[in-house]
Length: 557
Image 1 (tube, rainbow, N blue to C red):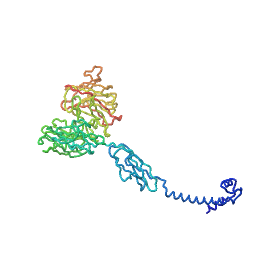
Image 2 (image 1 turned 135 degrees about the horizontal axis):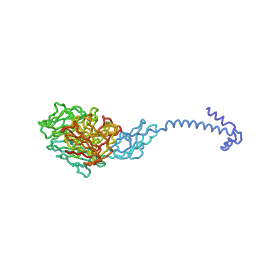
Image 3 (image 1 turned 30 degrees about the vertical axis):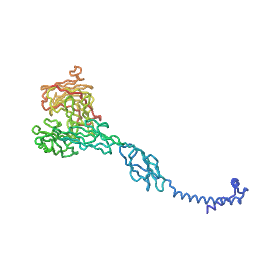
Image 4 (image 1 turned 90 degrees about the vertical axis):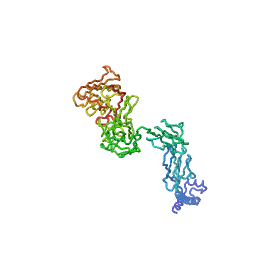
């Protein structure tokens, strides 16, 4: 009412020229000071404005209560856009309470007549999944979309029998979990394709062979290759080890084609060297009539199981070299599998290995030693030895002959420069070791390393502490040079020369030294070694391991 009275006063005031003009336009009074002609109109106009304000206020209040202005939260998908090789189960969630989710799978925009979400959506083929939410008191949400590329891959075929050794021929079935899949296989070791033989019935494996299989199905890509290697004993003595769990103390396996009343199992485990198991005074494990054997072991990093005849083989308490290569071993197997040796220059060279526990390090160094292909491997240019970091531990490389060659001339051709080694690296392209203080060495080291500067190479007859048992020299930069040890009963001559010629010119000789002292090793227990190792087990100062390449080795009696 106050507003109404105020409006009346305001509109009953004298009318100026401007107001008069407006009044005339509206058909009001004609005089410049007329109150009577205008007042009724102004009164009605004020009343109308008052009623309009009240109506508008009421209408806005009603609008604020009944008309939503905030949209519901956008739905969220549990699986993001991307490429997948299997059916994806997508859960759609919504943060707004009491919301209903509508979705489409064909790329169209969802509306309230679209499918209502009630559980995970199975995305079986490529497409676009879209969803929006509607909730009381909210505007419809924004649309959430995800694009899925579904490239289904046929399941990996499965073999009915585990790979392994079997005493007699076996029957192997191949199955696949993908519905209506077609399986293709090979038995000759080659990789199969859709042009290979189609599997129709179980395969008879009567000789040792490797099976490969792939599978395809409509709407699916071809599977990965499944592989299984089966060894059929067929009269040859074989021993197996059932793969043990890490740290297992009980071992078991089978022996085939041997007389269990004569032949026994001997087990060695590797830590820093090889130890016979389970005890030094009871090293033999009996084989059952069915070929089954079982024994126990102390902590291990690697295991080797031997078949032996106790009349011709006596286990040692410990061995530095792999017992599998001992004379008198009938058959052997190792766990975990890995190369135990390499073939190089017509000889079988064993690979030195240790465990990876801190107490497993072994001399020289002491260091960890590995048969990993990144540490020891063969290539077209020869034998590669490399110091490499594996699982945070620096692993060194060494190979050695398992047999004695005796007096003679030992020659190696080196295909890598050894004058720029890391400060902590020691390279020995050849050394002959019989026992402690019975050793012939040719060694190279980095600056301020094993060999005092300015020299970086040395010839040694152990023990090196004996006067005149060691000479040092400077090895020049050369990517092809030769090192030779001529070992005789009364002298040892060391030579190094540039190039790979069998008879070097005088200008090619780097250094030559003949030893005639009293520490020449005796023949019988010696083995030829080649190694690359870290001084005192210290990590490479430069942070990366050195590599040495031996092009060839030869022996002449």
